[in-house]
Amino acid sequence: MRWLLGFVFYKIAFGLLSVLLPLYITHVSQGNIVVWGIFTATATFLAIPFAFVWGYLCDATQHYRFFILMSFASVTLLIFFFSLTTNLFMLGLLYALIVIFEVAHEPPKNVLIAETYSHEEWKKAFANYEGWAELGWVIGLLLGFLLAALNLENSTILLVSVLFSFASFLASAILVVDPALIFERGLVSIEKSVSVVQRGAMLLSKADDAPHALEGFRQENATAFCLGLVLFALATSTFFTPLPIFFARSLALQTSTVFLLFLLNSSSCLLSYLRVQRRIDQVEGTKSITRVAILRSVLVLLPILIGVIPILPALAVSITILVGMGLIYAFYSVAVLSLSMEVIPQGKAGLFTALIGTGSAIGCISGALIAETFGFQYTFIASALLFLLSFIAFKKFA
Image 1 (cartoon, rainbow, N blue to C red):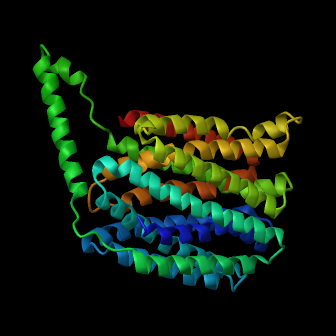
Image 2 (image 1 turned 135 degrees about the vertical axis):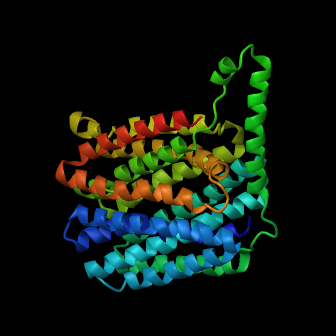
C-alpha cells in the first residue's frame, strides 16, 4: 500500500489545522465560539450533497485516482488562500470550499481499499490505512506543538500545512492507480443475499412450525446502522468542536499545550490501530462498535469533575479523557468502515461520508451554541446522551 504515502502527508496538514483553525477563527472573531460553530456546521452541511455526488461519480466513472488528486490539489490551493486573509466572510467561504473538496477523496479511498483486498482482508486493510493516517495526524500535531512553542505566527503555520497538502498531491499523483477490476463489493452483496436465504431456510427446516422459526431469524437493520453513524458523529462533534476553546479559555492553557493534549489523543489512537492490526480478530463488528459508544458516553462526562472535585488536576483529567478516547477509537473506526462497505450498496459510496457529515455538521453548531449559551458542562452532558443513543441504535442494527 505505497499509495498511502500521499494520505499520510495529507493527514499531517490536517493534524496541524485541527487545532489551529478553531483557535485562529475564534481569535479573528474576538473570542466568539459560535462563529467557529457556524463555520464548521455550514461547511459540513454544504459538503453533504457533494459527498453523494463524489461517491456516485467515482463509482460511475471508475476513475478513483482522479477524484483523489482533484481533492488534494483543490484543498492545497484553498488553504493557501485561507492564510492570506483575516476577513471573516472570506474565511467562512474558503473554509466551506475546503470541506467540500476535502470529502471528495473519502469515497474513492474507501472503494480503492475495498476493491484492492478480498472481503476477508477488509478489516486488516482498513486498520492499516487508519494506522498510517493516524501517524500523519500525530506528526501534524507534534509539528504544530513545536511551531507554536517557537511562537510562530498562525499564518506561517498555515503555510506549513499548505506544503504538506501539496506533498500529498504529488505523492498520490505518482503512487495512486485505479484498480484493474471492480467486483469485490458486488460479490459481497451476493454473498450476503445468499446467506440471508440460507439462514432462513435452515431455521424453517429445523422448526416444527414456520412462525416460531421466523421469530429467531433476524436480518441486519441498515436504517439503525445509518442512524447509529449519524448519532456517533453528532456526539463526537458536539464534544470536540468547542474542546480546544475549553482548554484555552476555561483551563487557561497555552496554544502549545492544547496541541500537546490533542497530540496525546492521536498518539493513543495510533497505538490502538497498531494493536488492531496485530489482533484483527478482536474487532467483532457490532460488538466493538457498541462497546466504544458506551465507553465514550462515560469518558465525555469526566470534564465535569474538574469543577465538582477541585482536588482533581485539570490537566490530568484532560489527558485521561483524550488518551482513553484514543485507545478505543480504532476498534470503532475499523468496524464501521468494514461494515459500511457491506451495508451500503455499490454506486452509493458517498452515503457513508454523507451520514457522518450530517452528524458532524449538527454537532459543530450544537456543541458551540450549548457551550456559549449554557456552559461547557452542558455540552459534555449532551455529548454523553448522544453517545448513549448511538449505542442503542447500533444494538438495533444486528
